[in-house]
Image (cartoon, helix red, strand yellow):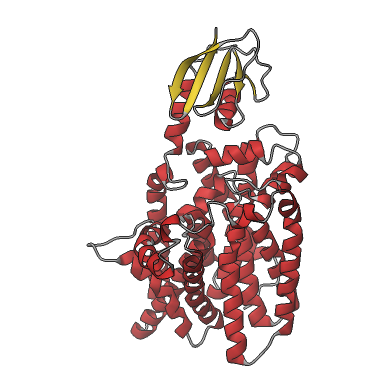
Length: 473
């Protein structure tokens, strides 16, 4: 079944998606303090000239497309953290709507598709980055756009899906180079399919050349001003030092046991009697490849059986395991494929027992289980899994530390201590990142020097973590 656009019957599910997504965003936005990465992007990328923003590729990695959009759309707004979170909300809503349409075309039931899409929106990484001023939700939207358009092109042969694939691929790469993990899986999948079907599908490969060309043009400013090594040799992609001499085999032996927490976080740790439930859930979607009647289910299974092996191969070659957030699309597709497998299995069980109603009850039960499970565990994971440190505790400690500065004081902030600058503005201080040299207080990283200004002398006032407050004498 191929959807051709918005139908009247879709209005109610889409309205529910809008309300639910906004509610879930408000829930997370209220609980999660701004993370350092959000503040860095907002101040140092989205808050500068747009061309400078796409030219300066620094650490943490610049989410070029997302920060450019935040800059252009919300240019007059001072708080780019908040506007960035709004931009992620739009992407979050779009992701759930895309999932709804795709799942509806497979399940042929709007309300089941709606429930599935909403629980997919509750998956921790998907929900968590839906209210972050970072590019991961837009990146996820591009990933789902690529996957759905790939399946549509295979099913219909229409060229318009190739155009959408190209658009989504360029957007994904322009958000983050780690889009390569998914894109490489698509390339391998289509290459294998072409060999098996003995169909060259020349137009598909022509569009991939177009995609690569446009992506290169998007990165030209960064390549010219920051250099190729800023992208290919930064700490996020360079081989782990411990394995530079021992090689790929040693890295693979280390990687697979270390990958176990990724699988646990993917499903928010579904466990029962110490059985490896998470690993089982991770493997099962590949069995969709054996479905004989539904082509989309079979394609989903075959693609799933390609997706993760390609990722592991790239990781072993690079000798670098990425952050979980870079795998947000892999996580989301894994969960969606698991739901499709549950749909197939409940259909088989109902057919064996000749109980059609049991199919709906069992499948709805699976969806509801995951919805409740994700809702319950998200509160725990939000504490320190999104960025691998307790963001709220860091924000609270830093705000209390800065509140030692008397109200009304002028505060100079070093360029490195961007988070203190952000907090000082929120706390109402007269803060400056380009100090005149006569401010009442100076806040800096511990390794930085105090600027030498004639007639002005500072003494150490307070310390916290790697930061210092100096007071003018």
